[in-house]
Image 1 (spheres, each protein chain N blue to C red):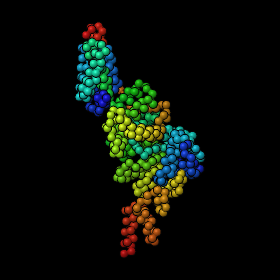
Image 2: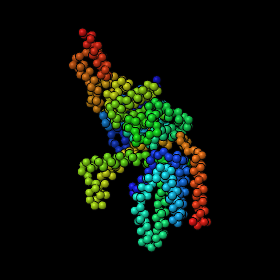
Image 3: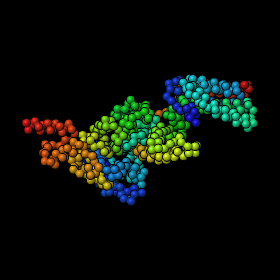
Image 4: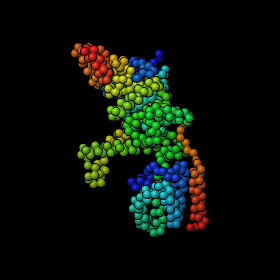
Length: 244
Length: 284
């Protein structure tokens, strides 16, 4: 599943698209996602994919987007074959496969170009409960920490003779138990310390919690949103009234 | 002068423990003091600190007898969040107290929680970044920081709340000697410049002779020694309580035991060598 992850992980990049308000990036991403669901011809999917790759080029993430695309080819082939096997014709199977790739790529636009920080601000701007936002923030924040813990435990267990790669499929899964148990214990200890530190910094003190950061729409954001909405209207009009 | 922290006939035992972890604690700490708290592992140091910022009894329940008064208010009657504006707590592992994706966002976390307005947050943020000399780390992610930098960020996150007391539980345990020395110097500077009361649990006493005003030694849940640092450090039996006495202090203790009359008592190598030099030249 790493190819999906590669297409969804944010990396700092200096591009025009990165500077757009994250809410607008989310809007563009959602719009392309929606259009991928309503499209049903090769021409329509071609337009969507060209647009997605154009955004990829604009945001300097095209290389990673294409890599994801290449890696997902085997998955695409599987979708195609299963559709054929269950009795759908070739054209329908191609459409379903294209829909899959459009959906994955359109979603990745937002995640490739928005930092977890921006994602947090988007969640705040939607007035989601702060406990939920904080849970998300800490989960993402501690991913590298837990990963380092896992590597350390794996190394220490290997140095004591654990052979992870040995044996058949079931045995290999079992081999991970001596890594997973200490990892879970460590995560629980960490979460206790985290709770202490949160309490010590007044988490949940006031219902009138202030926010030092807020999102502000600028001219370029309005422009991007207008272009996106106009494109969606024209595209839907073309599908339903011009039957492209 | 009214003490800032006061323990009155205080006893505490955790729910899952048959024996009390703190026994008959009577302690007063005044505003502006720099207190070093030492003792063997499991002697109750961390529990004592958790009683000051309210984690005990609010987060850890147990048998709680006696009173702990911080800045005129009884800890058991105030919630931890309220106490967070009076007591800043820096834990042993800074990794677990940096919640946000950037240093700046983490520092303002507490201020947002207590509802400070945006302008004031900005002012306090700039002040904390400057006073801890971490302006260059402002937009860095936690994983891009060294352990020493993380400790400074953790302190900044508590200092912005303008607490009267700063508690640090083994803050240098993950730091190399040079970084640890710089870190302790920063603490003393804070103590001097803003008059904040500092209580630090530290095993590396050699870092603190010129810094701590007072030393408290704990063992088996009780306070066994309490007094000015320069007096307590001379106690002969400190090693029995898991305290590693700096070699320069041990040397002077051994010399005085073997009948050498030293004109004074030095807490560091430089002043000791100057004292000896003066003594030698005087005899010449």
